[in-house]
Image (tube, rainbow, N blue to C red):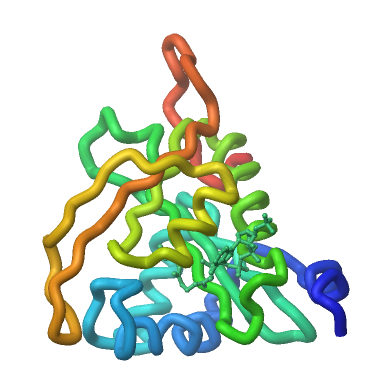
Length: 186
Ligand SMILES: CC(C)(COP(=O)(O)OP(=O)(O)OC[C@H]1O[C@@H](n2cnc3c(N)ncnc32)[C@H](O)[C@@H]1OP(=O)(O)O)[C@@H](O)C(=O)NCCC(=O)NCCS
């Protein structure tokens, strides 16, 4: 199977709560064995399902499906609680390692951003572990720019690490922007 064929055969669709097990199976190794996420304990399936339910009640939460299997996912969620941040989201994306570099991440983000724009969201922010050169390069390739760095703010797996913020402006310089609406209204 060529790279192009895999990308063509992947379906990007909204999450279903039944996907929670497969999504958690993608995410869990990054909790236990990597610095990619600063979460340190694998949540229960129930807790993880509740998270998906809560996030997808307002924001887009998408999965990439290939041959009936969830091979990646991406979602947006609130960046900060304070009201003036309502136009910004934090984005998150994970693809199964054996499916990396097949454009699945790019396709997930393209669909995610199209939905965010329809909602009225103007700014997407990726908060990435520093160092995580793979994710930084990926985000650069899909149009994010580096906008902030904290060198040492977290300790996991015996080492200190930081975070970088990368930003993608989805809609620029809107005077009097309208309050974003739920994904279920677009
Ligand atoms: C980051 C991640 C989602 C990228 O997904 P992906 O499906 O492999 O990315 P794509 O194939 O769509 O790549 C899109 C572009 O980024 C580039 N890219 C992706 N991963 C890269 C890497 N590790 N090194 C260099 N470039 C990379 C691709 O070459 C491609 O560029 P091009 O369009 O110019 O050819 C995936 O590597 C992943 O799940 N990583 C582990 C979890 C993680 O770090 N998530 C982000 C947390 S902030």
